[in-house]
Image (tube, rainbow, N blue to C red; front, side, top):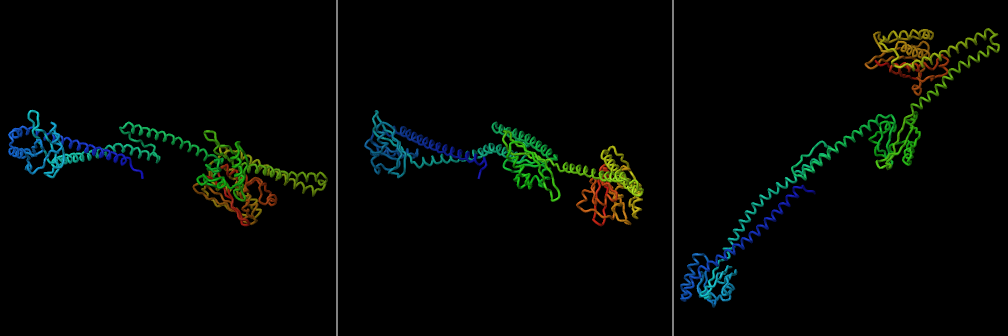
Length: 589
C-alpha cells in the first residue's frame, strides 16, 4: 500500500533528528565526563600542591603524629582523602584510616609517577575503602629532592553521580529539543507535502474532466513551476478537447444529415462508426454496431462481400447492392468503397458510402410502366378506329345498318381517346403548377361538395344510386375551388362506377385542429390489400377489363393524388374486398 508523502518525509526527519540528538547527547556527555574528570584531577593536584608545604615541616621534624592529625583536619575541611607516603611506600598519615593498618604503597602507579617529579594520577579500586577512587599524587620536595609523596583522592561514586546528573540534564533538554524539532519537522513536512497534495487533487480533477479548474501557485519556485505547467497543460487540453468535440459534433452533424449511408470499417473487419442513414438501411443502431464485426452488423451477403473487397483493395471500388427489407420490398444501393489512411499514410480501414437508389429505380419503373401503359391505352382505341374505318372502306359503308353501327363504335373510341388525352393534359397541367401558382382561398366546403355531386348526378341516377353529403354548412377549408371540385368529382365518379346499382355513396367531412378529412364511402367490389399501394399510379387498374368496359382512363385517381399533393395534403384508401372502399382526402387547415 502506497503511503502519503507526508508520512514518507516526516519519519525520515524524526529519525535524522533523533539520531542527531543522540549523537550530540552522547558526545556532550562524553565531553562533560572528560571535562569534569580533568577538572577534578586538577582540583586534587592543586590541593596537593597547596597542602604539601604544610606537611614539609612535620616531615623534617619527624612528627608523624601531627601529620596524621593534619590529614584528618584537611580531609574534613575539603571532603577529600589525604594520604602522606614516605619514599619507601610506608603510609605516614591518612584522613580515612590509621596508617599502621594500611599496606605499603610503594607499588602504587601514582606513587611511582610522583617520585619522578611528575603528577601521578590513576583511577582504580581502593583496597582500604573497597570502592573505586581517583588518585592524584605529588612529591613533597626540599632542595629539589623528594622526601615524601602527598596523595589526594575522591570516591568515583560522587564523580559518577555528578556526571549522571549532567547527563540527565542533557537528556532532558535533548528531549525537549527533540519534541520541538519533531513538531518543526511535522510543520516542514506538511509545508512540503501540502502543495504536492493540492497538485494531486488538482490532477484528479483534471482527470475527471474538470479542465477549467486552476491550481493555486505556491511560493516555492520548483513547485510553483510545476503548478503553472499543469495549469498551462489543463488550459491547452481544454482548448484541444473543445476543438476535438466541436469537430466531432460537426462531423456527426454532417454524417447524421446525410441521406447516404456511411460505414467506417477497420482493417480487422470491425465497424468503427456508421451514420443514422446507414443504421436505418442495416436495421441496426450505431451504439450496438460499433466495435462489432461486419458479419455481425451486416446481414446481406452481397454487402459483406463488397466490404471485404474494399478492404482487400487499395483502389476505390463500386458496386450495386440489393437489400431485401422483407419478402415484398427491396432496397437498391449504389455503393462506393475507398481506403482510409492515418496521418502517416498507412491504411487503417475503408469508408463505405451507400446511395439509396430505390426511389430512382422505382421512378424509372413507373416511367417505363407509364410509357407502356399510355402506349397501350392510346393504341387500343386507335387500332379499333383504324380497323372499323378499313371495314367501312372495304364496302361496309354501302350497308347502312352496319355503317351506322361501325361509325357509332368509332365515335365511342374517339370519345375514349379524347378522354385519355384530356386526363393526360389535366395531369400534366397539375404537375407543372407550383404551390405559389395555385390560388388558395378559404372556401365553404358544403357548396363545393354539392357542385361535385351535381356533376355526377346523371350517372348516379342511371344506376339508381343516392349520394349523401354529411358536412357542416359552416365548415371551411383553404383550397382551390376548381381543383378540389375535380378531385371530389373523380372520387365520386369512381365510387359510382365500381358500386352496385341501388347502393348508397356517402360524403363525410371531419375536421380537427390539424386537418380536414373528406371521406367518400362506397359499397362497391373493394380492393385487395396488395393493390392498395398502387391504385394511385397512372393507368393502374384493379380490374382492367371492367375498368375499360366502364369507360375509365386509369388516370382519375392519379389526378386526385396530384391535386391533394398540390394542396400540401394527401389521399388515402381503406378497402375490404366485397364490402366497399373509403377514399379520404387529407387537407391541412
